[in-house]
Image (cartoon, rainbow, N blue to C red):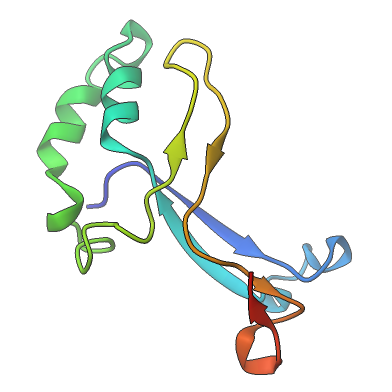
Length: 105
């Protein structure tokens, strides 16, 4: 069972987002352990810290375990109370999937 993560799809344009077959990329982004620990310490998430501890680390994860999430862990700024923006590692296809002539951004 993976730790907290987001699934996402990339589409070539806004008109394509209603058709999953038009996705040019699909992936997952793991959330950093320290951010999860901070948020799950809030009373609004009672019990979540124990659930996260039972999951273990990304090294043991069935999705991110091949590299411990090194290429799929985002960075977050802000704090548990107010949130904030984040960044995703790696590149995204630009101009279509790489096998159709697109290039990694």
